[in-house]
Each structure stands twice: as structure tokens, then as C-alpha cells.
Image (cartoon, rainbow, N blue to C red; front, side, top):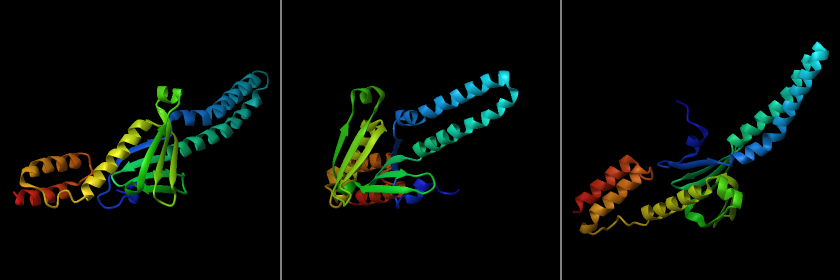
Length: 207
């Protein structure tokens, strides 16, 4: 089975933890005018055909706003924001793809802002401050921004924990707790089954 575009970008042992898009308000505001124009064309042509039947060919005009609306839907659907166990990724583009990602290691701070209506309808802006050349990534009006921010911060914390060497020289009394923590990381997809079993064997050998 062919890999999806997202899967093809992932590194070895990298897992997608969360995928979101801009809130559906963004899509609705983009296609509202096209919906109204389509309805007006349909209503106008329908009324005209009552007096002049050949006017029915005017229904072809409705294809113009419908095609434009389809384009807006595809743009919205293909603009995705991802959190993996290593990176934060922004993907846009229908055919030509534009990918911007930030390593969780370089994320210095995360700011979230929600307006009054954003809190009601669950959307907001997430600003990621990084140590990379990009400096700042701003994700505007994404859906469920609290969940996105939490997933990113949790992944960053676990990444640091996994790479800190905590498991290098554990005390015997701590080994069961470390195995339990590893198992939790495995359940969340941060650690693979093979990595979990290997590390578990190494820890048990030190008891």
C-alpha cells in the first residue's frame, strides 16, 4: 500500500500524535460568498426559464462558483498542522506542497491566544518561538488550540526525558518505575514495541 504524504515525511520511529486544521469558520468564511452566488444563479435561471425555456442553459454558470468553492475546500483540507514525537509540522498546498517544521528540541516557548468567540467555538492562534532561523511559527485560527499546545508540550517533555540518559544507570529500586514509564511511552506511540522490549530487557538485567 502506498504511503500517504505525511507518512513519507516521518523519520525512523517518528509518530504522529495530533493532526488538526484551521477551524471550520475559516472554510465557511471563504466559501460563503460562493454559496450565495450559486443560490442566486440557480434562482435567477429558474425564474428566467418560466418565461424563456432556453434560459435553462444558464445553469452552466453555476459551475463557476462551484469550482471556486471546491478549490477553497481543497486548500483548507490540505492545510494541516501536525505534532509528532519529534517535530511540529505545517503542511500546505494541494499539488505543490509547502512544508515548514520545527524540531521540538528547538522550541523555546509556546503562546496561545483565544478571543471570546474563539473560546466559545474552540479556535485560536498558537505562536511557537524557536531557536531556529525561522524564529517564530504562527498558526492562525486552528481548531482545538489547547489540545494542540498540550500535545506539543507533552511531546517535548517526553522527548527530553527519553534523550536525557535517565535510563543509563538506574538504581535497582527505580527499575520497575522506569519500566512502567517506558510502557506508558510505548502506549502513546513515543517508543516503539521493539525499543520498549529492548530497554525493558536491559533494565531487568541490571536488577
